[in-house]
Length: 52
Image (tube, rainbow, N blue to C red):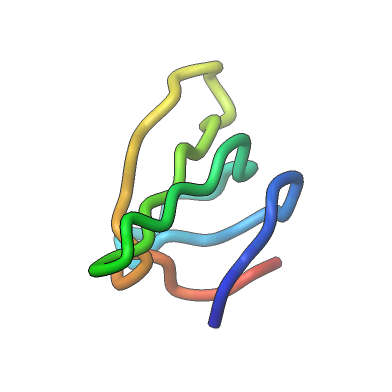
């Protein structure tokens, strides 16, 4: 499932955030997710549990 910017997501570790950037390098999809405390984390698509 390809998610887009400004989608709220829950990660598999239970944290929640907002996708601010999507990168598809052909082999994998990575998302930059802004967490509630303002921290930006980069995760692979497999680390996203679901959109919320």
